[in-house]
Image (cartoon, rainbow, N blue to C red):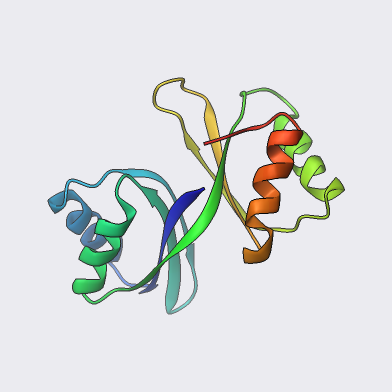
Length: 136
């Protein structure tokens, strides 16, 4: 399991810069991130090198944030591999809320970050291992 930092932020100029400045000051590395915006507010989801410290620093700066369990699956970079993973989840009746990509800095391989319903997270891990996918 990985811990993902989720932030609910106002959609305004400089917000992402402000967040990354706080993380930089704390020497926290962003390993993967996705931003979903709306007209006034958005959600920033990220996997960082030190999630609890990032949470504390951003909370102290006034950001509304939380830590969420997500699954990281290292995959080979080949045609159809994402489809194979999604088929394995579908066949196991696991619903995925969202996915985004990062990469393993050592191997250079993509890492798919995914969130499933909270009650499914350990089932997801078992399913992926049984289907031959490597969890990180």
